[in-house]
Structure formats: C-alpha cells, structure tokens
Image (cartoon, rainbow, N blue to C red; front, side, top):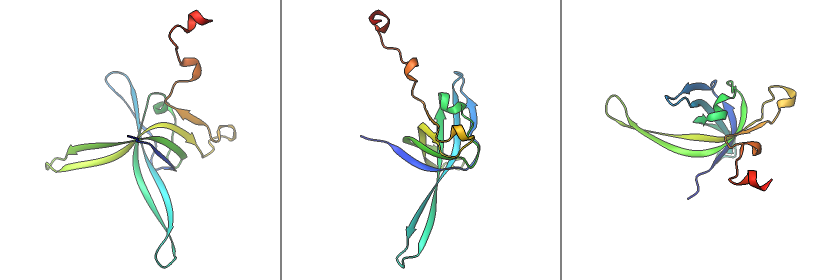
Length: 132
C-alpha cells in the first residue's frame, strides 16, 4: 500500500515546537494549499485546503515562520479521539519527511531542501570500516 502526500503551499502559522519526555523534538504547523478550478459556467474559482503538519528530528529544528512557501512530502496519518462530550473526532494530518523552501529567506537559501533522512556522511554501513 502506498501512502505518499506531496503539496506546495504556505504555512498558516509559525512552527510550534515541543519536546517529548524522551527528549525528541516535534514541530507542528498549519499549511494551506490553494487550488484553482472553473465552475460549470466557466468562471475561475479558488479553494483552499487547510492541513495540519508534523515534523520530527532535524526538521523540527528549522525556523518556519507563518507565510513561508514550501513544497512538502510525507505521509497521511489519521488521528482519532473523543472530545469532552464523548463525541468521536477525526483529523487527517501530514507527517512531513521532506521540506523544500520556495520562499527565499535569503537569496542564497532559495529552494533549500531539508529531509528527515540522514546525510550521506551520517549513514553507517556495517563493515564499511573494514572495506577502506
């Protein structure tokens, strides 16, 4: 089964960071994806999809202010809970694995990509030290 989400949009609030009891960072931010379409009369219409996103590890350390244009890639997750009145609630959110900044923070940072995957120099291959 494939669960992959890719979108381009803008953050709707600054990233909020919290730290788990194990010391791991989790960041949450809102994300808006705009879509244009034509109605049955041929008039151009716009609609916006608002999505809650979570990032972990190094991605949670990024400074992502409100209004930042991003390309995100991750997977969808369904959260379910009961509210104070005992009603079932559901939320679909995105666990983001990769972020590409499309809003230039500085000229040289334009389209900088970040991923929760380790860098090549951080990947340890068992037995590698014996090979070289």
